[in-house]
Length: 71
Image (cartoon, rainbow, N blue to C red):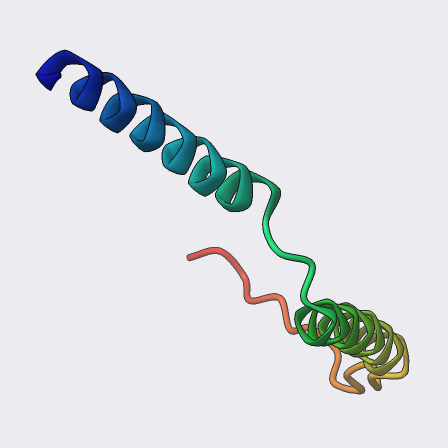
């Protein structure tokens, strides 16, 4: 009787661990998280574009470089 109990316990534990690993590895497809990730990507792209535009319109320095004579 004890070996049958142990066998059932081991099978149940294996089943529970399999379900746990499946959920962990596959993840849950939460639509709120997916929307947040999409918004994060969109804002990142916008920030990169604005950074490129601001660097390309950055005024060049009007001061000329001064070369000092060697001592």
